Length: 193
Image (cartoon, rainbow, N blue to C red; front, side):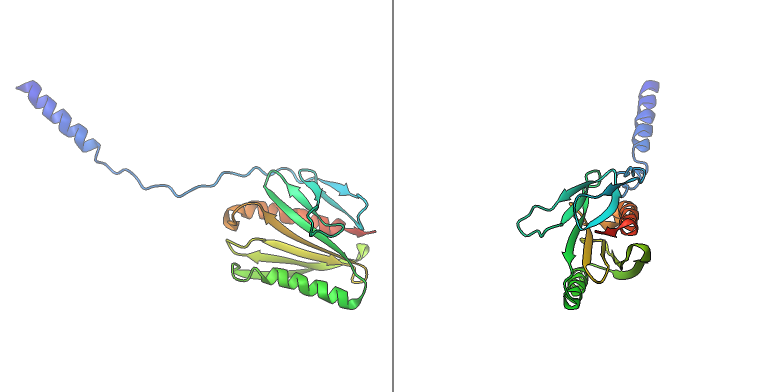
């Protein structure tokens, strides 16, 4: 009888210990992104501009049928993203106005998914470069950073950051901030040919 009582108490204890708090499920996590040290090299490949771009990225000329001369991507294989660059020659003040309006329209296409769009003016007088950086906030904005640079007379360069993934700018925020530094370096070293 004692062994039966021992078995009954042991079974009850085992059953009671299995009914404890199982905890709450953890939220979905995202992998940690290893960011390389920011280093740059000169881009000088016969285009009407020169600049520095990251050593951990590649410049890939745009070979699509719709591409114009001097278009290309700064491709980030480690981040599955790219800065698309489109260069235009300016032949008249009206043409510059049209390019500026096109840039504004590209940015404003993000309004349905954006929570905010801020503009930041920049000017590098030594290189005769001025323009704007657009910060497009919002979890599902397709292009979180866009910019243009010009000398207002002959050269116009537009850029947009894209990721080849479903937009989730909350989880991409560290990479976006990292690439923003690359964009600022590109603009600060931009020279017209």
